[in-house]
Amino acid sequence: MSFITRRKAILLVQPEGVGNHLKRTLGWPHLMALGVGAIVGTGIYTLTGVAAGLAGPAVILSFAAAGLVCACAALCYAEMASLSPQAGSAYAYSYMTLGELVAWIVGWSLILEYTLVCSAVSVGWAGYATGLIHSAHIPIPENLLAGPDAGGLMNLPAIFISLVVTGMLLVGTRESATVNFILVCIKMVALGIFVALTLPHFDAAHFHPFAPQGYGAHEIDGKKYGVMGAAAIIFFAFYGFDAISTASEEAKNPKRDLTIGIVGSMLLCTIIYMVVAACALGASPYSVFSKDAAPLAFVLNQIGQPRMASLIAGAAVVAMPTVIMVMMYGQSRVFFAMARDGLLPTVLSAVNKRGVPATVTIMTGLISAAVGGIMPLSEIASLANAGTLCAFIATALAVMVLRRRAPQLPRPFATPLVWLIGPAAVLGCLYLFTSLSTKTIEFFFAWNAIGVVVYLLFGRTGSRLRAIDEAVGS
Image (tube, rainbow, N blue to C red):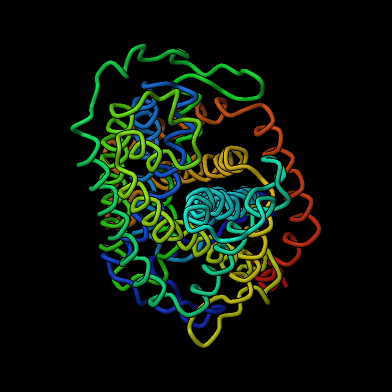
């Protein structure tokens, strides 16, 4: 069978005795918290300001547009994750339906996505942490609090938090999921306080003009402006539900729990984003708070709530690492799945006594720390989005292909109106991809060109499916 078209069997359960395995320790509350923990983070605490600077008050529509595309993709993920609960997310779904080469490209794109998300969130976290460091008068040189793009030497807080989260994940899946659940609760309380404090200061005049940069995406000095230009960046704030699908192999009752986790977290987070963004815009002109690295804390300072601003900053410092934790978790599971399939060195699929793929977890932590230490948030977020959009398109295609190829398969969750939702996910993701900056699109294709070379040199010959084909042929 050609390496381009060979496909894995559709496994309704993960078979025992084939490679290393992960322990089933997560219930639906843990999965829901993983989704909320990944989705509600840098997007709401930091990217709200970045996106408002691109779209103005119409950034609320940017949230809605990105959320709609992600909702379509989430429904496709829910079907595939509950149908075949194994590690790997979109990579695994592509391998079962679209062939090994496409699966490799999707997996390679996911490596880009998850690693860069970890880096981006560490930079967003560092913005709030630096404010607290200044308030506490801790004597850390300024050139160690920002990367080269901001006139510094390295972003030491970003490096620090990436390494701390790596250590937490090495403790164990259930333990880190429990910590994530607690931190998500802290994060939600802090956002509730922000809404309660800003509502009395709501000024509708701040919403005029509503869309100063227009509705379509147009490029100025390397950045895409307008509602859809902002949506392409805000898209970064919504994904995270796909990380839940990487936990399929560790879910106690995957056929029920994965659907609850994926769909439930998306609906909840879309509402949270739009409410918080509206309150921020109502309390302060977007042209003012969009320039600050910690926009929510800045808004509270503007309305005379400095203590609460410190509280929100403190909550961000405590709770934003949940995003890094979930994304680093997802990255390690995709790496694990690709290594178990032989497309990457099998040593990377080794699992320690706590059921954690330690080698790839440490590798992810070190790389994300290095990138977060030197690159700006907007650049990292934009690059990460390209990889995610590729994975979302592949998952939507996988759902539609399986509906045609194997309509008889038992589906614990079936995507409703699949011939509307599936194409909408594909077309929406393609539109958002074209709304990314030219430099980002070029980098994405260059990254995957490198990936194809790596596959042809190693993955194609190391593939477990290739070995099976050769054994059958002999």
